[in-house]
Amino acid sequence: MKILIIGNGFIGARCRSAWDDAVLSEEKIHTTEDVAKILDAHQPDAVINAAGVRGKPNVDWCETHQLETIVGNTKLPILIAEACQKKGVYLLHIGSGCIFYVDSPEPGGWKEDDFGNPIPVYSRAKYAADLVLSTLPNVGIARIRIPTDSIPGPHNLIDKLAGFKKVIDVENSITVVDDMVDVFHELLNQKATGIFHVTNPGVIKWREVITLYERYVDPSHTNEWISNDDLVKQGLAVKGRSNNRLQSNNLEQLGIMMREVHEAVEDVMKKYAAFRHHAHV
Ligand SMILES: NC(=O)c1ccc[n+]([C@@H]2O[C@H](COP(=O)([O-])OP(=O)(O)OC[C@H]3O[C@@H](n4cnc5c(N)ncnc54)[C@H](OP(=O)(O)O)[C@@H]3O)[C@@H](O)[C@H]2O)c1
Picture 1 (cartoon, rainbow, N blue to C red):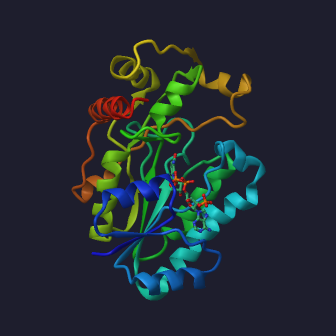
Picture 2 (cartoon, protein in one colour; picture 1 turned 60 degrees about the horizontal axis):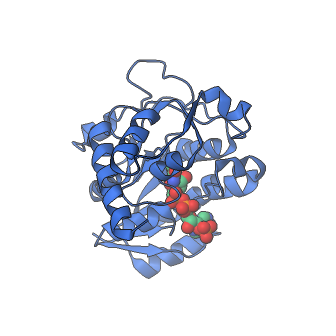
């Protein structure tokens, strides 16, 4: 199978380095014809869209750059889907699990076909793409949340939490990147259609992540704990962040399992510590 990865950002590059059967395009896309040219050049069996606009330095940027956010997260996936549909090529689009706010209506977490209730511009733009792409045949949507990685980097939950002086005392469903790359590959392999919550089973408290960080990486680390409401009240964010629990029934139905979140995060933290040790960070 030949996979074409669109988008040379954090997730796209991470997938490229994990897969032997993938090529990565970093061509800028403005039209469906741009996508068609890329498909003609690479002749892939399957495409993953890892391109999007996440906001720099963080997602609050999207609140004042609405059009760029909509173009990158709603229009761009539609352009890619249109070209893939015309050529009969399977598309896996990376969505976000941060389209759900507050607790799920039923215990166990938000399900794949629950209607989202996104508030920020970024989440609305991501959800808009989900709503329309999920009506198409030959398309899968893989929603991820809060990537947590064994390789240090600015987009890694571990680096983010360790770097904040004040941390919100919450728990969440998260995506362990080491597991995610295998799940994406299997979804591409199966050309799986529908929506998938690519999050590790269970929820983890930020207190538990910090405890593991202090055990394996930096025993001298300290931080202050604040409530979720304090994040906006204290001016640390423009919009409140989504904290939620997702369930992944559609992955289970395909026989695709991810490690329980605590097991996966402890393993990742040990690898993260080893990486930093070897890199003398
Ligand atoms: N990281 C997360 O926390 C997270 C969580 C949930 C979902 N996601 C989703 O996962 C996907 C990948 O995110 P990421 O973290 O890898 O973001 P990223 O590091 O910002 O990478 C996104 C890439 O898309 C490229 N891009 C933007 N517009 C493009 C266009 N018109 N044509 C071609 N490439 C374009 C960007 O290029 P430039 O930098 O040159 O603009 C960048 O290389 C996004 O859809 C994001 O919404 C990410």
